[in-house]
Image (tube, rainbow, N blue to C red):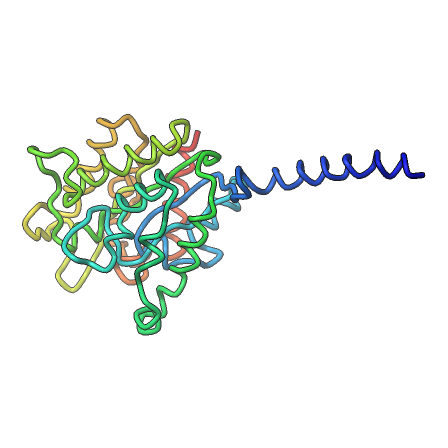
Length: 268
């Protein structure tokens, strides 16, 4: 009987180890197939019809929504959100250190902006991911950079993180360092509408919203990564914008469906 018990114990330990490895990566970290970065179009939508949830349901891939409302690709000024910009998050992914994000956005701020109450959980989730196991990084940014009057590029400094494309180059660099095998997909902004007018004619000093989308397209070709042309391929126009964007800015169910379809065409 004792010999039998001695034999069973190591077998059970081996089985337990295998089971845990199916759910967690190295060092007990959790594994996800897709990490979906973005602004409020991604982060603020945690419903079943969100792009991240639809992607998970449609493909069976495990998707982590790393979107944060109000953020940009680029860094700039002393913005509270600077540690949540795409280039900052990509750097944290590479360093496997989200201490800067955990130290910001005090409780009082979140209480006044309840729609962002998911941020602490998002940061905690990111800090527990084994990024070496990820298959795809998706970046959906650009609209907030446009509305925040972020310069598109700086010819004298290709990695100027205060510009849209400089920040994109830096983001891709760090994500590739974190996981060279992962696919990177960039989703451009689409045509939007605000009280100032439509993004195809608005120009805050550095180009129209379409110019920002086209700049991302060119940068993705330069960097050798995949690009979803949500501006030109979504079918969103002045005549039907309200059918896809419930407030002129954020995708509703129809907008999410189109974005999902375009992303799935790029998945490898």
